[in-house]
Amino acid sequence: MSAGYGGAAPTGVSKNIAVLAGDGIGPEVMVETVKVLKKVGELYGHNFTFKDYKVGGAAWAATEAAGETPSHLPAATLAGCEASDAILFGSVGGPVDQQHEPQWKDCEKNALLGLRKRFKLAVNLRPSKVYPFLSHLCPLKPSIIGTGVDMVIIRELVGGIYFGEHKREGDKAFDVMEYTVEGIRKPMTFAFEAARLRRKKVTVVDKANVLECSRLWREVAREVHKGYPDVELDFMYIDNACMQVIQKPSFFDVVATGNMFGDILSDAASVLPGSLGLMPSASLGDGLHMYEPSGGSAPDIAGKNAANPIAQILSGAMMLRYSFQLEKEASAVEAACETVLRSGKLTGDLLEESERKNAVSTSDIGEAVVKALTA
Ligand SMILES: NC(=O)C1=CN([C@@H]2O[C@H](COP(=O)(O)OP(=O)(O)OC[C@H]3O[C@@H](n4cnc5c(N)ncnc54)[C@H](O)[C@@H]3O)[C@@H](O)[C@H]2O)C=CC1
Ligand SMILES: CC(C)CC(=O)C(=O)O
Ligand SMILES: [Mg+2]
Image 1 (tube, helix red, strand yellow):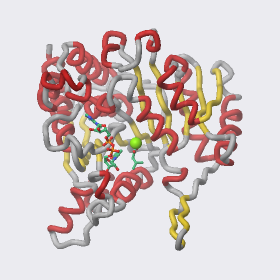
Image 2 (cartoon, rainbow, N blue to C red):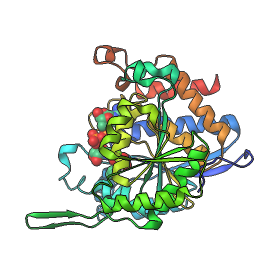
Image 3 (cartoon, rainbow, N blue to C red):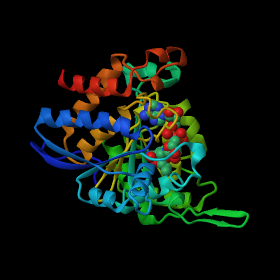
Image 4 (cartoon, rainbow, N blue to C red):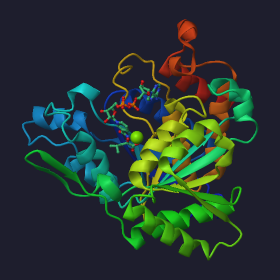
């Protein structure tokens, strides 16, 4: 696993991609992403094979309908992922008020956390920036945006409170947060490596005024920092960070943080590009990586061809870069997305309420990105 892209540009590569579209808007944005990636394969002479597998509530329904024990993460899906060169993941989960229904209960835990654990996807990259020519999409004042809002959150992804013991004892409930030095060192080292390729600053976001785990994060940060004297290191509490990311976003370059804090902070940071629909992510393991948008299944807009597919498409671009070392192709996809956004073709999430009548559809954006690739 490396923060750099490195190596000579490969030509004519053959890759198997496991496609786990999941629930809600997942299948809608995934269709557009696969369209874009197929076009990349065609234009640059690569052979990408896409194989679909069920995950989440969709997998539960399919296994139940087939008379099998219902599962959010069937064995066939895991086997498909194991046989692949990279996993493209959509989103999982049902409406937020239906978490108790059997199809949705523990869906995210079983499916998404299951995959992250199974493939040791310890480092999650969530870039967030204000594109200078798209700053009108950011709801913050121009004086706050200034110039150069460009941060990346490096989130630890297989530890912390999401993976600790969850327990109910009568009137009490427990969720245990636990970290080891080794579990922290991996994302921390990645953060320093990434900072070296950027503006050379790491901000560790934690709650070290209260949590012992956060104190351990700081110890590891200081230890890793010794190997990177050219990189500046500072610390910030999570509550303040949620405010500063909106109030003074240009402060941040690389953020290194734990699983839950990174989850929360990355949703807050989606305000910078303008929407969760513009927030891609890469979840890096030791060999196999998974690419997933930062947002969820958005049940409020699912099934309407209204979701913004750019986060999923940009996650696909990250796959080209980090799993296949196809930097030129990744940059081409990013440039095509920028062209489409710049052209004013926008889904509803990027428009004011009064402007939503002008929103274009999920598939319009996918087709426009394909067209921009060939222009
Ligand atoms: N990685 C995953 O699979 C995740 C799954 N979830 C699950 O998703 C479900 C909904 O959770 P919420 O808290 O509502 O979070 P969410 O991220 O699904 O939606 C929050 C808001 O952002 C909007 N949004 C998200 N992605 C968008 C896109 N691509 N285009 C346009 N608008 C977009 C939604 O319409 C909604 O208004 C739950 O079941 C939750 O557990 C939540 C986060 C991550
Ligand atoms: C199940 C959640 C931890 C998923 C999520 O919100 C995320 O990864 O951003
Ligand atoms: Mg989240």
